[in-house]
Amino acid sequence: MADFTSSRIHAVVSPSTRLRDELLAQEIAGWNGPIKRVMDPTDVDHIVVDLDTPSLFDPPGLWLIRCDEKWVKKHRERLLPLIGNPMGNGAVLLIAGALEGGEDRAKALSKALDKAGALHRAEVPGDREVQAWLITRLGAQPHPVERPAEVAQTLIDRVGSDVDAILAVLDVALAHAGDQPLTHADVAAVAPGLASRPIWDFTGALVEGNARKAIELMHAAGGMEPGAAIAAVIGELRKLLACTETRDDGEAAAWSGAKGRPNLYYARRRADAAGRVNLLRVYRAALHAQSQLRTGGTDHALAMEMLVHHAQRIVRPSGASMPLAERNAGLRSRASGEFRG
Image 1 (cartoon, rainbow, N blue to C red):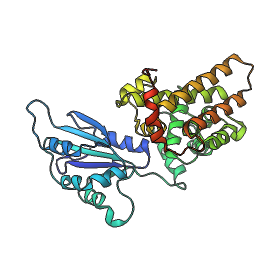
Image 2 (image 1 turned 180 degrees about the vertical axis):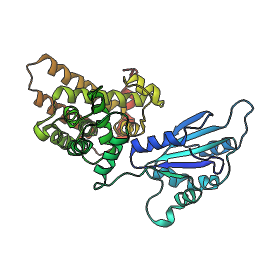
Image 3 (image 1 turned 60 degrees about the vertical axis):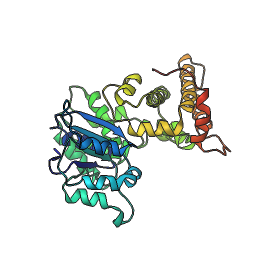
Image 4 (image 1 turned 90 degrees about the vertical axis):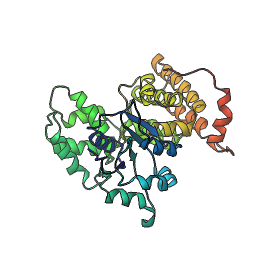
């Protein structure tokens, strides 16, 4: 657990969302007070003042701040004095993919945190180390695994070397295995014909308006099953639309049909970039495409390709002279009604 008695600010850093959140859970496991979760907060002065303002009614609180390098650079000078100072009425834990990049002299916050023992890193294995790392992880989990090296290689062949993608597919494969030992066949069953690219790569490309990439993924290694692909697209769009309705991750997850309280940091960024109006238009188009697939009489591959191109025209219209964010701002006034899934 992070020792907030020696420093009132700590940081959990990793380019992997999954490993970062796993390390975060370890670092705050012993915290018994209230936890306040924010993302890229603008009122940093309020948080700093809160750390030094005793409360007669509430115990010290822990501020969990999800942020990026741009936010750290903007507020670095306000955060530096917190390092090495013992906890007062609360503490801060930064959660980021990276704190500071660029030249060495710009890494003042990272160096100070590291010197104070307040910088916690979840290292991501490189492409050459990922198989050995995965075999070790498979051996450490409670679910039995048959031939871990073979399972690890199948995961890498199907998904690639991205740690977050590998672990996401592994979770599904473990559920598929049920009470039986996990085998390479379970991995192949949940990630078929994707040529080392999982289905969420396809949904991401579609939502971002990258038609070329989406179509390449559709037809890779024999093609993905259209019904599963359209269901994944609709699920992703429901999640992004929920992110435009509330800043609470628990509410957004519930409205989109997900369970628990997932990390929606990157989903919110994608939703903000696309805009609610555009997401609604793509969502309606996806529902129409799903209806076509279910009623039959339509070429499934053609229906999916039409959806991909339609999404591109909505999200990235050709010849647009105005930035996407400005176009969205002008269109928001036309949107009415609330989305609740």
